[in-house]
Length: 486
Figure 1 (cartoon, rainbow, N blue to C red):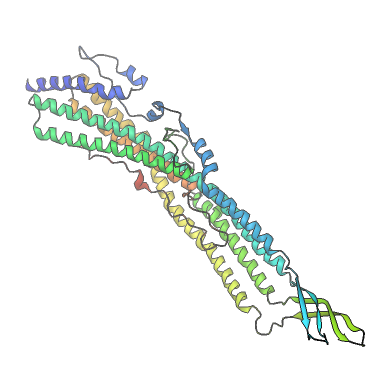
Figure 2 (cartoon, rainbow, N blue to C red):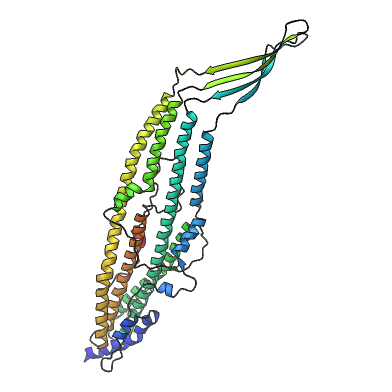
């Protein structure tokens, strides 16, 4: 008899508190039809299931799309303009390197005397250095390689910004979904605490159970507030990488569950090592080092120094006439006896050896990083598929069965709430897995270029073809989850 009375009390309490979450989240239509029947005179209660996309459905303003974010970043991200400026600077340096040296125009005087004799020579000269051994063309070849480096850097920076914007965008999307899931869990914990308080009033629970339920409700309320802060932080990060830090916070529009980044797990590591902009930069840097050797060797061949002009010779050749105008001509060449530029040639050769080894180092580093991110992507995708196809459907079924038993007064309402809470906790884990799929998959598709605010490297900085160190961090995706009760 006592058990029957307790069941009736629990059922009555459940009728009161169950509608609070139902009002916040309407169930799918097909689930409503499934639970339209009655069990005797007991009023049926429709179970509430977690679902994605409610932030977009309840958005107050215009939804913000990934395409809009990319367009704004193209206009506002300063690193893209920096990369273009580096191209212009490299072109200007290339132009300067191929310019012929300017001639020198000067005054010359010799044996100048004053007084009545007024002798000596005075005149002007024009001096020109004749560049030999194709030094100008070899110097231009070096700066051609620098210009190519600047162009690859600009391509890399564009990809870097696109990848960073997409990653930040999907972090905001996941934060939106986690916020709604956290609020759902908060409501469930509040319902459970209310049930425990009602049971305490009827003598069916003790104070310790009520206190434990209230602590869990407070923790979940704290989790929801923390998730609000996380969403705000993620939006600010997105606005910063776009280049508009004052961009008003909006609800982003996208599908977290579909259209995942497609990555060929068997080929992606080789693809990144072979086709990454970092690999192309290392190749171009090696070519630049090769042209440096040719330029250094040409410096050992001396240039010609030509000088010619006119001088007026005041030496008298008769009582009434001076010697007059005389021509001058000089040809000089530096004799490369001691300095044949051998030190610079040896240094350029060593730089080439280093650049060739740098190509190997870059490829190995990319493989190492890609393997780590690929592992995270594969695990995240495995988790997402498993949660979507197996874990969540089973949890939904368990919750539905308990809800049906509760309608037949065969299960207590706390058990229903526990099953519901478990289902929504699994939903938050599913969202975190989806976020990891998007962030790691996007990083792999973007050749691991994830920092959209890192300044592009100058063409001469060949020692930094790989600079990014901020690969997606799974720990940022972990949701604050109160300890579930058994």
